[in-house]
Image 1 (cartoon, helix red, strand yellow):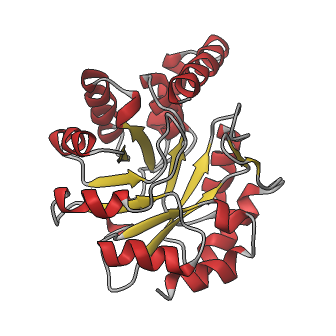
Image 2 (image 1 turned 90 degrees about the vertical axis):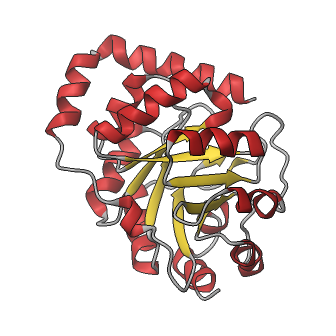
Amino acid sequence: MLADLVAGALHDASERRAARSLADVETDALARPAALDALSALAPRDTVRVIAEVKRASPSRGSLADIPDPAALAAAYETGGASAISVLTEGRKFKGSLADLEAVRASVAVPVLRKDFIADPYQVFEARAAGADLVLLIVAALEQPLLTELFDLVNQLGMTPLVETHSADEVERALDLGADLVGVNARDLSTFELDQDLFGRLVDRIPSGVIRVAESAVKTPADVAHYRRAGADVVLVGEALVTGDPVATLTEFLAV
C-alpha cells in the first residue's frame, strides 16, 4: 500500500510539474513569508499538545467527512487549542489537495503541516509555496540518501521536518538525520494494521531533547492518556476530530 501511495503521489506531482515548472514553484516558495517556528509551537509542556488533522478520507476507512470548508475546520481546531494543523494533500485516497493547505494557512496563526507522500524535492518546494511550516517525511518510504536530501531541503527552506517512523531501525535513521521532531505511527503503512503499543516500545530510543509525536489510533481521551503515559509530547489526531465535534473533542483530549 505504501509503495502504491508514493507512486501515485509522484505521478500526480509530475503532472503538476508539467503545468508549473520547478523553477516557478521554487520562486513562489522563496517569496513566501518565513515559516512559523513549529518546534516552539510543539515544545513539551505540562499537558499534551495536539496536531489536529484536516482529513476527508483514508485508505483503511474510506470517506470520513466531506469538509467543504477546510479553512473553517482549521479555525475551529485553533479555537479548540490545537498547537498545529495537519492537512492531507494527497488526492487519490485521502481526497486532499494543496488548495486545502493554502486555505488553511490563510485561516490560522498556528503552524501547518503538509501531510503527504513526499518523495521528490518538487513536493517540498510546493509545500513551502503553499504556506506549509512543516513537512512529513516517512522513513519507510525513502532510501536514506533521498531522505537526507529531502530533510536538508525542508530545513533550508525554513520549515520543520516531521520524520515518521514505525520501527527501531527507522527511529535510528531519523535520529541519524538530526531530526528534532520524530513521530511514531501506530499504523503500519504497508498493511494498515494498528499497534497502539508501538510508541511505548520505541519511545525510549528517542532522546529527551527530541519532540516525540504519537500518530494514529487516537479516538478517545483514554487513547491520549495511553500515549501520554508512554511519554508522548504530542499526539496527531484526525479521524476522531472530523467525525465528531472538533472543539469538544479537542477540549477532552487536551484535558488529559
